[in-house]
Length: 416
Ligand code: GLU
Image: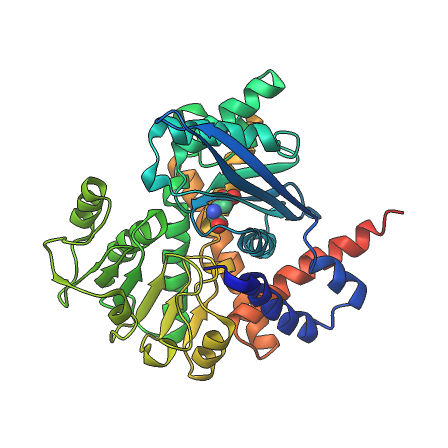
């Protein structure tokens, strides 16, 4: 995934194109292309077999100009400092596009959670939090779930931090269980944002989302909820692939059944409601909408020329390489960029943080109504900017984001 430092470079390429169009001042340009803080920690854990293992963890606070650093923590064997830094930069732009008062951060631990017991995962999580405890906090840096992390892991993070500071600090992390300060609607929020931006894209391109065909890569939190909510507004999800395999059904897949199947089997591979499908073939399908909701660098120049979709909604972070993106844009594919399409998660994380700090919790309807308003505002800001600057939506989203962060950087001025 992150071989040779290519992910942060991809972020820089995207940034440069937008900064040039914006006429960004060279000094601010330098500030915004450097991570503010990168932390690397070693986390020794006693494994269930009695042996000690040491895991490497990272937390990067890319930029905190607009507020506390915000962003998830992922557990994956391919995590690297390069990847976490790129993801932290993307969080900075995502929060700015979503117009929420956060900077950008990201964390990761190099590990394979599928090979670890619950006790080992808890020990690793607690040790990682203990190692970065001085750097995080409701006003400093607020983690959340990402690839292979969930509400239980967020509960352990909240508890470990609270034990260290000596009181219960719910707002230190978002994506928590509802019972302990989580927000209703947070689990579905990223997929809901994907659904809203896809629906708006269809409106803009003047095709009916009802009956539109959809292919989804990835069936974790983002892919499964996107598929479910797109189905609920009348789209027909005809193909899904995940880390193990895939399923295709021209008449449409039963997503509710597929979610139950995935809960039991940890994969959708073997789901009885369709024919088997290879991940490579997913990109070739004749669909209206493609939702990459897995990992980075999935759409490359190897498969981009085969893509037939009118709309690509990037549920994942960084799923499309810059050259593949250029190719798709030149061919007229409407790519809703990650920092817009998947911003629903962090937006509802913001709502969770606000509710925790008030100690007053909203109804789910209220959360979803506010999310809808924020996503519509962000979609419109990016679309209008793309029209004004005659550019693609990704560059436009960066222009919106960079402009917001740069304005406040200038207003705050230079310290020392
Ligand atoms: N990990 C999610 C993302 O990439 C959510 C981050 C958050 O809620 O802070 O946007």
